[in-house]
Image 1 (cartoon, rainbow, N blue to C red):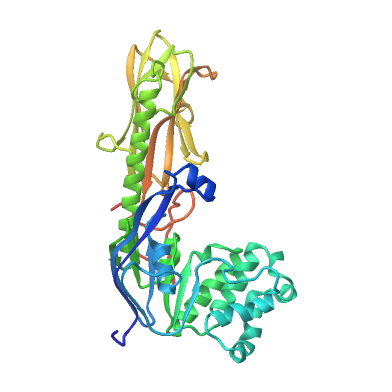
Image 2: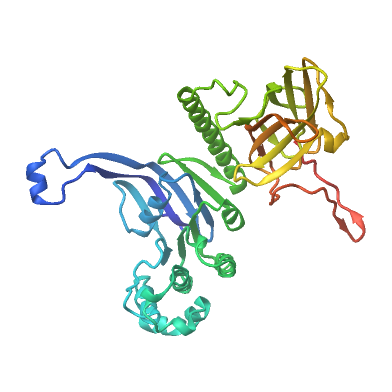
Length: 426
């Protein structure tokens, strides 16, 4: 292997036998001879990649794509069916929480056992023991059996051992997702330190933000193959877009199935299957559309992109007045915003036999999430003419990484001079 590489993976493949109905007893195997049926599932298919010394890479992908299997192959917990893996230097791994710990032994005893698995001698462990215990913050529990530890305490001890073996290569599988916030930050900072010291790091994580802060490169594994690799931000954007497209496709298919199953006599075609409709129908919605500012019907918008809710109605009676309103809810049920013509314009709408009422949101400050739109027609005193909940689902996306519910308009100054703002809407 070339000297500059700490890890070199060449054309590895890995399959597993998955038993569909396995008999565990001799009696079962004799009586039910058809048991033991299995199928072979190929988890990794001819994967190749290299990691330079001191480089940090992240492995991303949906559950079951082969990320953790790749990491286990690197640790030699299992071996590939074909291909070669070459590791250069001492390897430390955090694959499974507390792997190698004996529950009846104390934390101190388990430090010696676990560190020896990583290749340290007793003298080397003696020199590092105080640092390991101090980092774990388990001084008062270190002589208690680890079966009395919480999962967070397990993680502290496991991580403390793994990062104090002076490894050349550190393999991490979702371990930073466990523990309290303060210890997570401590682990994260320690990861940066050991990376700065030249340790090669491979991280499997669903936390893309963590990977972007630590790693120079990301590998996206999809269906057992490397689908994309490169600068984390751009690989992650490609990955997230693809996952969102798949999610929307599944939602659309499920919606079609639900629509076929349910009688839609009371719900018109412009309503989603999740819609709930109430009201006396003196005035009723004949159509509701979510569009962009040009009138094109859409369900995906960027933060900062204006959108319009166009509501068409029909009335059984003339000479009525009504209050038209909308509500926006995040998909976890949080009420994001609601308004109506009475609130905004201090007036009711004079109702004709049919007509259209529209509201344009010019300053869309919603941050990326899935949302649901409600619409309603009420009288001044609150009588419901037509009230449809969950009528239109829509999605907000954005390139920036604001966090929270909405984006607040702001400006920054340095020494009294205002920094130029980047346009939010591409």
